[in-house]
Length: 138
Image (cartoon, rainbow, N blue to C red; front, side):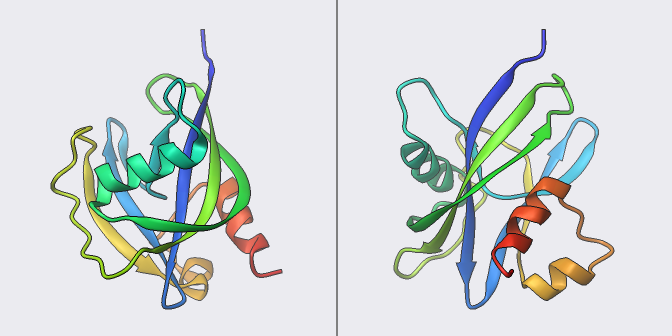
């Protein structure tokens, strides 16, 4: 039976661009925000810090919560609700996606400006995420 899963995602902003990661899934590749599933007993903020460290090898400072977006997982057809926080890198940083203890298939990362997000035919994200980011500019 499908279920609803809670996750934390980071909209990491640096020099007027946002960090996105490309993940390889069973049915192809997707662009997503870094972050992941909230484990029992964790707060969304604790999850965010853990997941960002595991996926990218960096620390972030949370600026503010910006809302939620959702998608349906490809393999289990679960609905994933993403509690999303606007963040910035904490101090100097070097992104390293190779030391990923969860073995997530992150194949690429990219810094994308809002205008690039609006005008890119190549860069596709979930509609509910697009609307959440767009709301930051209205």
